[in-house]
Image (cartoon, rainbow, N blue to C red; front, side):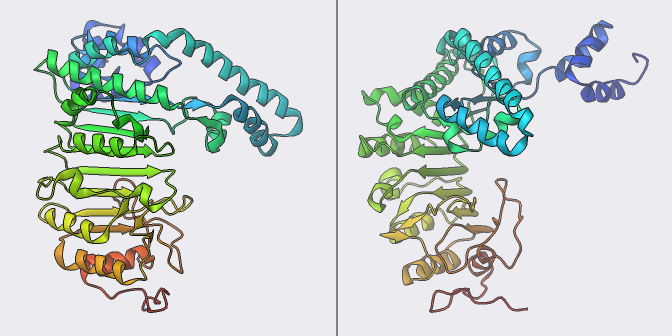
Length: 424
């Protein structure tokens, strides 16, 4: 194999499974050197039942391997043991024959007990700020941090299935906030101690308690603001079930958002909102009446309460750069998430049409995606996927609304709030 051209050897090594790759690297020094870059993926996954933080630290101390890590993803999904136990039986009831149910249930429970034991063993190192600070400082190509609570942490068919049942998952609010704070504080400390390290350009959290932003004292947000200073992509899912310190929380989030001069993509989603007043956000208060994100290209708002007039003014200030706008949640299985004034955002009232007309005449959008509105007819599929690839048919109501806003097509809703049939 060593007699082959270097490019061909690299391609072979790239395609090998990890176990075979490790064995092949033991053949010679040259193959060991060629295969080193395929040992570590650009995305490093941290799970609570593995000692991944120590492993990340060890990788960061290796001159060659450290250069391969560009993204660190923390899968923090937690299990509600009581409901998970019942959901295992429920899923197996339809997946397995009667004689296999007990065996399948026992296997799933045994896997969870084993992982729980490992989780307890590695808990001192999990999201430890000191470990992460050194690791982040050594990873000079690290540019993205993702925190995910919705993904199943177990590589098991049964657990993957029951994870889709919401009651399987628990949501420890305090622990979630503490871990996020330690991760961002570690990133800030790494940037301060290692000027040569790359700034974090992308940050995401799919379910962060809204009260996290009401730090006491407010100075505790300083290291987080430092991390926000280099962001180009920010995706935040906020759980608003607890409305304690709501105003302080939104003010703290606004303070951090004002520290993002290079932001290109902003995704904000809120869940568990109960009334319009709870979800109402003031964009002018967040960015100031005159300030803008000069580079903002993509904006996605889900579960956000807006005043239509203020929102139109906010968008107009970003017309030079904003090209993609999504309002509402693309998943048709979720409830409507976008509010306007004192009602759901429905495209069958004067204010709604005024907003669309504003988008049509003032903005220079390339893509517009409205989802989950309470029209007479609801699309059965989303218009775009998460990467803005068009997956919906042109007859979808969302597609026809996009045609109105982006390409100057006809308004698709009649005076009776009915969807006008598309021309054949």
